[in-house]
Image 1 (cartoon, one colour):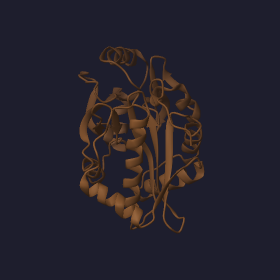
Image 2 (image 1 turned 90 degrees about the vertical axis):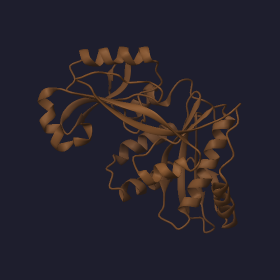
Image 3 (image 1 turned 30 degrees about the vertical axis):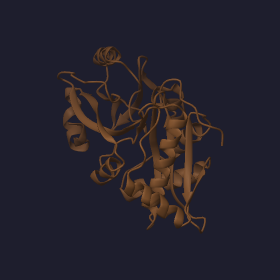
Length: 278
């Protein structure tokens, strides 16, 4: 496996992300996907992207004005961490967070003692981590997690996206196996300029799956340091247990905002079928 490198800007604003998903870009000035949400035409943060790409405060304001001028019944725009959102009504602003582990002078802190102990335990149980370019295996492990959580997903679209991602030098992907050569867990790390994002995690239900995940995160942090990034982004999770797990690596919460715009005629319908947008 060749050493990974940084994406020149952001994975999430790369035009090839939308091309791989076979969806149109909704706005020239922002990496938003043209989709339908419960039948309503919309511009949204691209599927599987955490945000609309790196931007300044001025960029965000320009995007806001462009979105307000566009004839779009629904907009869902996830701003990157560090970009404030004071967008006033009719915008609905939701506050979320991700978690960052930050390097000091180019070096990330050592794993906490209990996590280091888990690494030793994983190795003692002969778990091994290997680079992976097998789209089918990564897809299988990732979809197992989504199915356990009853999260719907377009498997064909995700396969196209992962196929494109794995051709890039700006990522590193791994699978952890047990001593019976059974795949236990997987992850893909996306190396943006300055920030490595833990993405597309997958996991077989197993007594040692947590140990496998710790091995993956340790490798992701090493890769972030190797490519010269100062931030390892855990990607955030709405699951309190997962968020707590990330926090136990010493990762600090970083606020990020979701801005939503819904035309009046679409509100009653979406309040019933997508209450999470309000």
